[in-house]
Length: 275
Image (cartoon, rainbow, N blue to C red; front, side, top):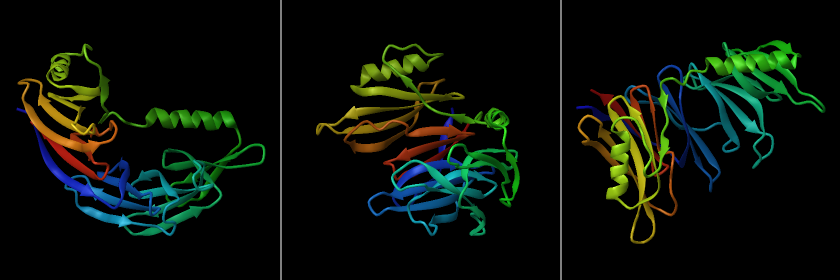
């Protein structure tokens, strides 16, 4: 029978904002305390959950975010204006060695391709596009042809590999699905007074799903389950959000053979799949 074995848990300061697995077996986590206006970053080993860096901050304590992580180097950005979405600046930070490799205050991120950062500088009428070396920040070339820049962007999107990710889909009562999936999920609807929709994903011989039940005080519990599709047996159950004032979707995903659960917006629980 298929099994999901808990590998590790992680909880940082503030609410979990972003969870970014990188290209070499590590996990970058961004957490934010919006009341105190503080942002923290943590870098974990996905194999065993050991912490390389936990709750580290940069000089800018809140108005900063992540553009890209590759080979342990994080590209950060600032915001053109607080509370507005426009990004400005490229800041390459070596997370293990705790140092900046390079900075470009006046450039903004566009995309990553073949170990180059493609970026632009805002102009009065038009922007200027550039390619910069990912590790040194050296400007390799200016790309004046907008068509060429667009084609490079399309190539970058084509080679972006999300093949080992599985994200949940929505399931509505009475819907059909392959194999035993539809029957199991419709049984869940019959057996429970579900609020909203069910989110589900199939990984090998396991059905993963979460749904909301209303409590007596009109709040909601968000329940996650994993069932063995060969036996219909529940192999894992977690309440991932208790007493919510509203429905809380998007609480799990799979990468490789690992299940990531987000609990109470503050904790990540990682399970390994074992046959």
